[in-house]
Image (cartoon, rainbow, N blue to C red; front, side, top):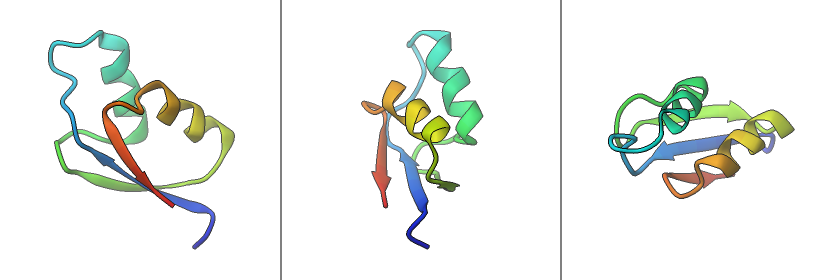
Length: 59
């Protein structure tokens, strides 16, 4: 389980650039406080870095 990340959406994409909404959709996040589990890989880390101000990540 050490190679997985729990990502929780804490801030809405409403009123932000559409790019952020697309990144959230790519991660599978659709609602506030929704949590998804994704594998820890460079692609996912890059997506998280783009929206780090909107999500909380637990390893």
